[in-house]
Length: 247
Image (cartoon, rainbow, N blue to C red):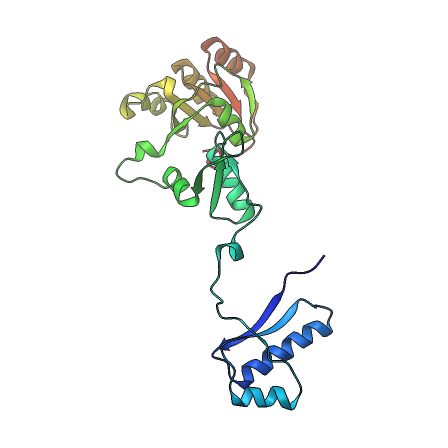
């Protein structure tokens, strides 16, 4: 299979040094077995160059009139892509793993429906000083939360339903925790509470009827906590991550 030519070019409007350097470097690469290297020039010859080429019986390098990069020169022919139904967490993972800035978004038939960039995602993860409540709002499903966290489902209730969920970390005293719904104006059934091994917070959240309770650190809740979650139809999830990373 023939290799794609690699043109060795000096500066624009080349002088003798530039042309000779291109010829020498291409010859060096060919001596190493890289036959695809070809000497070139980005401008017309002159009398001195012609004299040198004649003196050493060497062909004048090929003329390249335009070295402006084209899209085909820089595009990726096998880009990393994402399906429309993927979560933002999956998009971030791809962007981080492959050190890229944007992802083409495809439908189930492989057609491009849009482009997702790291700047689009920033809207969901950057604090909003004027409306901090929106920082905690996620339009998602419990199934998507499970996938994003790679978590274990202990009890599920309508996990495929897409809805607005507000995240809440149960880090305060249980008396303060019980008042958050009224002060924030967020109904318990719209809340996803993230907590570690705080049994009092776990039971309080379930009694309030939150949408989901995520227990972090790969900790297993006590049997009565699980039983109460089933009774109240509260989704109970066990995250392998610590509380900050889960949130």
